[in-house]
Length: 287
Image (cartoon, rainbow, N blue to C red; front, side, top):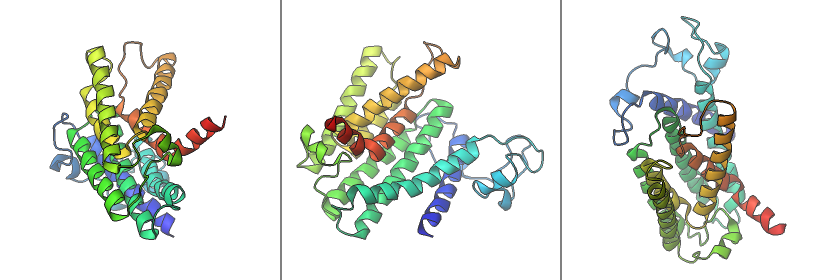
């Protein structure tokens, strides 16, 4: 029942975030949760009919109505149920991963719940960022600032409240890269590494290979993950982004000169390290 409740809550969060992402039409500095983005009743994007409560049940309404508007019968895209489903899976899979990753070192169930809540908020924020970046090609400053604030409170919680000495997602392998004795120094080095790397990419390509929004996202992510987790997250983002770009070019949906939003790939890189980072590093060193 706990997992089912988490999944349902995640579906509701996904439905809300998808609406915010679709209604957001400002620039990078525009308020994220403006009255326009979160206010007003939901309506059909085709006929404009205001939707009733039973048409707004996350995932279930889309399935029951077979992906069509109940009034005009126009097709409702896969974006809606997919966003709700992914957010629901985040709410379930994150606590499962936390339980297996830090159960041995965390002092009690309360710590596992706290860490899980932090990571759920982080991934839902990254999910919203990805939806907006895919649609508009921008990353709102409000989201970057929110991730930075979450990172500071997360570090306080990890180091001061529950006293985790080594919060790296790579487990004991993180010790091979140094800087594991001091949590705050580790986080600052992670942010510095991300800032310098993306700053050099922007300068080297004169802004054509990477945007300032990606830099402003990478710095709080570096602080959130710390060193060396951010190194692996960025590497995964570049590899996955390159593969996606090649596939898009071969499919005729992009050209060699076309731009590809990199924010979603940074989010995927963080997820890759979170869920599979330790297993990948262990596999590599066992070869």
